[in-house]
Image (tube, rainbow, N blue to C red; front, side):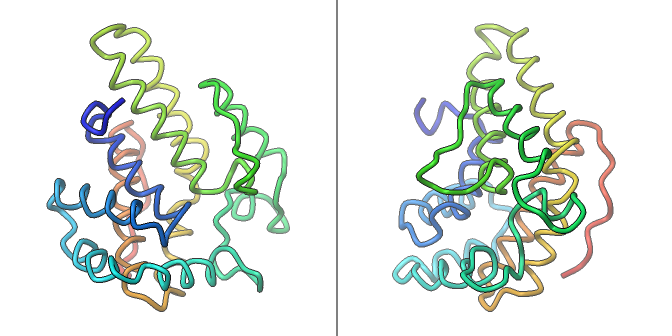
Length: 207
């Protein structure tokens, strides 16, 4: 599928997830900028993203400081940490997330060394489900409907239950304005997807 074949929602997922996998990649930053220019809804993040195009490495340093380590994680990017007792990793909940991925034939890239419930992986799943749905909507409407339902259930049962805590943590701990703007956009985007599925979400806090 080409960039234009994915549909607007999948393009959003693709642009946002890239910064969680390779924040210092010029390609990730360019994809984010392209999407933001198309959307014309998030001028602050667009301005920040353009400022870092020539030196994106510092973006990764700030992200790693918050979310990767090697010291204590300020903002854990894992669902199980927020939803299971004792802030644990690789719980039964992580396996339930992986079960969703298998419904699309997706497996975790072991070279990336992150569990299934890493927020980037959860966004990757939603990206794939939406891209496939967009592709199937004219060829096989029934299959497209199944894909939409799968994504909605995943939003409701998994990422929709913890993303606001994650984005609030980013806003609190980020040193760079880029990540605060990014967190606000990610929160707004996921909230809009939940509302699209008919789920009431808590009122977002002002950062």
